[in-house]
Length: 297
Image (cartoon, rainbow, N blue to C red):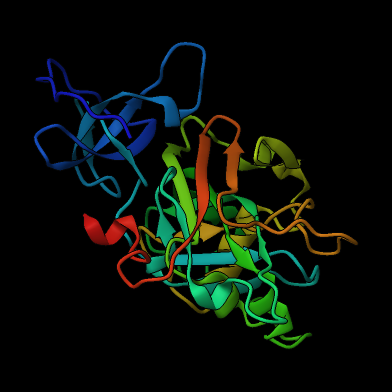
């Protein structure tokens, strides 16, 4: 985490491009527009931002500086998993699953190897959509008008609890994916001004530096427009809702010899024009260890 002085703003800008949330040296939390270092589009490496004044889901102006955190306070997470091609599969993660782009991913004792039950922690790098205005029963053509921007996320998954102890063909998604800190995301919300088309972005996942997923959002079974429209069919999507849109091939599912995540493994998920999240798997055994960073704010 980077920390520095908040400087007095000398100007105001009409809108932000890469929205982050940060703690300044005065101890206060702000929203800001990340200032990118030279030769990168990854907001994870930003060390300065112009402070945003106003409501990032409504009217706001931009001014000044940063410590990077996940780009929104804990709200709700809605996740699309593209395992059945006829319709998108919708499940919910609790807001306590949200994590920052750099904090550890806690794995409590019940998800670790116990006796003949082997821990099967898996990775899923995903394009993430942030809703800016309420959507109910909207069409595909209307969907992107309801989007604030895009970021990247890691839908951390435990295949043992999701499938083995969930009971195929009806997986237990909540126990397999919903633990505290199992949804790192960020490092910024890149607005639709910068990304007008979310279906042309490269997406990757690395584990301990080795590329495991390398795909393009053009290959999504269901595009962002249809996911938003489908999810809004009978459920109102609210400003600040977060949609994880599903993962490409390259996870351990279906591998003859899977290589599941263990204590100390480092997972990087990245999205073109957005940046990266890099988080370490950390086994925890006490209640105080398992409290993720959102509860410390």
